Amino acid sequence: MIEFNAVTIKYVPDITTLLNFSAKIDCNTLIIGDEFLGTSSILRLIAKIDKNYTGEILIDNANLKEIKDKDLSVAFIPKEPYLFKSTIEKNLSYVLKIRKVDKATIKEKVSFVINYLNNLTKKHNIENFPNKIKKMNISERKIVTLLRALVRAPKYVLLDDFFLNLDAKYFPLANELIEKLKQTSTIIATSNKVEQIYKDFNILDLTK
Image (cartoon, rainbow, N blue to C red; front, top):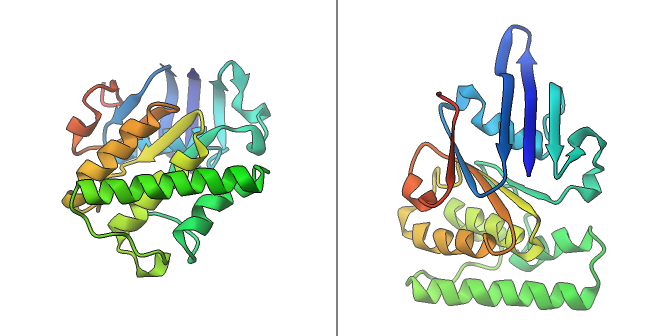
C-alpha cells in the first residue's frame, strides 16, 4: 500500500501542484485529472524523482524518505521513453545487472521476455522490432520500456500517460503487456485518454 498524508509539493515559488493531498493506493489505480492538478507529480514522488515535498509518503508502512533508492521496488515509465542507445537485450539486462542478479538468471529472464515480445508481435500482426534502439520508432521504444519493467517485476509500476503518442496499432500489444505486469506488480497509471485500457482499475480523480 502507498499512503499520502497531507502532501504538498511546490516546483517554484507560488506554484503549488499538490496541496495537502491525502490518499491510499492499495490496488491497480488510474489517476485522472488535468496534468496541472498533479497526476504526474504523484508518480514522480513515488519514484523519488521529486523529493521536495512536505507531508508524509508511506510505501508498505515505510517512510519513503527513509527507503534507500536501491531498495525501492518501483519502475517509473515516463511519457517520453528513456533508453540506452544500444540493443533491446542490453536495455533489459541493465536493470537486472545493477541489482546484482547473476548472469544465468539475467540471460534466462531476458530471453523469456524477448520471446514473449516476438510472440505478441506475431499475434497482433506487427513487424518484429529492430534490435537496435536507434532504429525504433517512438511506439516501439515505449513498448521496450514496458518490457524493461516486465523483466524486473518490481512491486509497483508507474505509467505516466503511457498511451500518449503511441500508435493505435500497438494498443493491443501494450494492453497485453500491462495485463502481464499486473500478475507481479501493482500498476499506478495516469491518463486522460483510452481509459478503457484501465477499465478494471480503481479511479483516483483529482478533480473532485
